[in-house]
Amino acid sequence: MTSLPDIAHATASRNDLLPAGAPVLALVSGGADSMALLHLLAAGDLAPGSPLSVLHVNHMLRGADADADADFVAEQCAALGIACRVVRFDVASYAEEDALNLEDAGRRVRYRFADEELDALCESAGVSPLRGRIAVAHNRDDRVETFLARVINGAGSGGLASIAYRRDRIVRPLLDCDRATIRDWLRSRCGAWREDATNTDTTRQRAFVRHELVPVFERANPIFRETLARSMDLLADDDALLTTMAVAFGHDFAETDPGVSVAFDREWMCTLDRAMGRRAIRSALLGCFPDASRLEAAHVEAIVDGLSEDAFARDLPSGLRAETEYGRLIVSRAGEASRAVAPSLLPIPGTADLGPAGLIVAEEVDPSNLVGTPDSITVDAGSLDRLVVDGPRPGDRMRPLGMDGTRKLSDLLVDAKVPRRNRGATPVVRDGERIVWLAGVRMSEEYRIGASTARAVRLTWYREGSGHE
Image 1 (cartoon, one colour):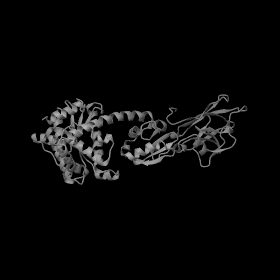
Image 2: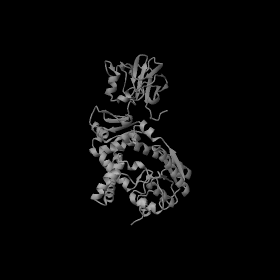
Image 3: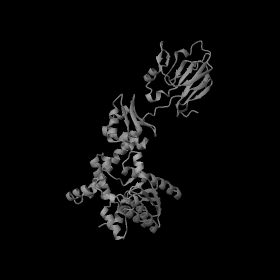
Image 4: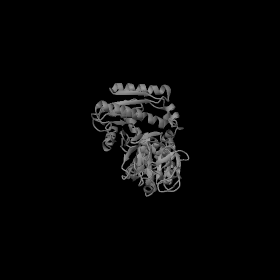
């Protein structure tokens, strides 16, 4: 029978999990799996030349037992001569505040502290943080149990691929090892470990799957875990390919403002097969909003449906909102409309700084030097001395260039297909009570350059991010 060190070494080598010389931070709970990982890493075979440290996070969920786990890990690390950091964190309070289940909350807390600790270790070692690794002790039994739990709760092919050998800096060298093999090896070394009593509580889904379901499958197929692992590997390979394609489509068919919004081109997105559309949407959203991981399949399905609807709008978890705006479907923070333009004086010549709305610049020019783009116009200045720039007001009307009657600014903004969330941030240049220009949309007929024009002013709107200062 192949030994545990050989299996772990083969897994680490085949999947390039532990680069030689890069810092390794092991997450050690005190259980058998994590203690076996600690001993394997301490022996130096899995990551030769790599500085090793340990992190233990006390979730403060099991009172004195949790404190005893922390003391045990610290003592074992001291005996091995390995640096160990113990962190206490009230996971129950965090879960309640963020409406998370305890397992999800604990996982987030562990990896947050692990990321911070590994960054510090890499900086101290003078290596790129991208080379550092967080080693965790998930084994093949964990992978099988996760698969079955996801079958029960519902999941796509990515979820059914179960636990990955590597995710970013997180690596799992024991993922091809069975729990029984790990414990037998640890006993042979007289290695000690701590037992968590909650692992036998079958009212918890994980324990129910482990103690009630897995034995049933093993009776049907004694090598059930081995054959399921091969199936999960195939699913993982297929999922990796589809994910690569989805990332490319999400990049090409959407404009992303990180942390602010993702704007999907509806026409191009509708050319995708529905399955790929789902993946492209999820990929783009996760790239923009890390908390979009809380989106369920039903939310993504609704967004796919919304691509073909002209008046689609839906609130999503984590304060996100999806709505169609003309040729795009935009996902942004709910209620995060662009700020209204604060009133600013615009001297001639001079500049009005509109903050997030950009700049309006006024400069005197030759009346024959006409400019006619939506963002830059030339007007008859007449006796103008100073203008005011603000945003649209309720009831605002103007006589657009080339028209006889007046129109509401709100109608002009709709006709120009200015997204609803941006309308309040569209600058309006005023001469007293008269509107000179609805920036980016239309100037007023009253300020048209004519044969009798003696003084002309060019008004240019430099939108935020244009690079103009």
